[in-house]
Image 1 (cartoon, rainbow, N blue to C red):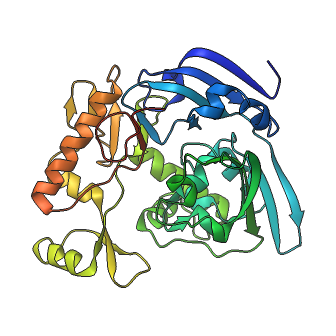
Image 2: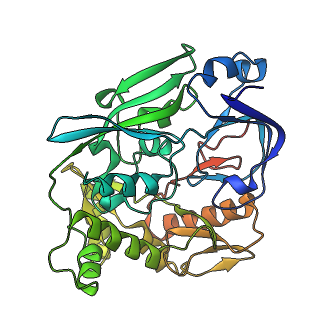
Length: 353
């Protein structure tokens, strides 16, 4: 045993996923320092196996146990690496809670993350998922990702241009059997225009009586909006938005909008495609607030699946599949899950270590 990491056999993962569903791992390693990787991967079970990398457990669903090792990053340092007067480079380790980083940067007058306030999870998951909300994506600020390369057996620094970011996607997500994110370096400008394109933010600022909003006030408004719309995972188990907003070709989207002109749709940055509201599609099927046993769709937001107490991951997955099938039948639109699914039958789900 070493202070660089700790090991636990037959570990419960129920307290390490925000759905709060029961699951177990054959072996759990908590990594506290970067130098722990080299030593840890000399253990045969890690060297030969395919460990599941677990952050805050906010973007996955355990539909079954994980039969192999699980690795979790606990390192949680944040510091300013450099400051050139116009911008600052901030390094945050993977174990930092994402919202703590948002607050830390804004407290030091480093704007940018205010629209991403209150997103659950850790810094390590942010570049993997390319998290985004209210018109902002984390890739706008990522300069370098520091990650353990399992193929090379060494720590690597990957520049943002090589991260291959996409909508809720990245190189790290597509090559998840290779990379383990240990830290992220973000470049924050000292001056940045507010992003207030979404009505929910401006409406909340008006309710707050804010006529001249600051970046901190925008973060407060976003937090209030998210709190009103999304159930707190510490009270009601959930993983935030369960489905991605589907992106269709412009022709497909226009055909659907001709039938349903009230369907919310958004630009994608590509003139050939449009993004549709998955929440609207789900609500039209009457799913919002529905419950099957302890697995349910949130009354607050149709994109959020919830655990009312004793639902298993398999039961939540079954509900998600019913929702997706209904949307497909009604609108001809395929819904994709946003969380990573461990076990189960959804395409791309992980069934073994």
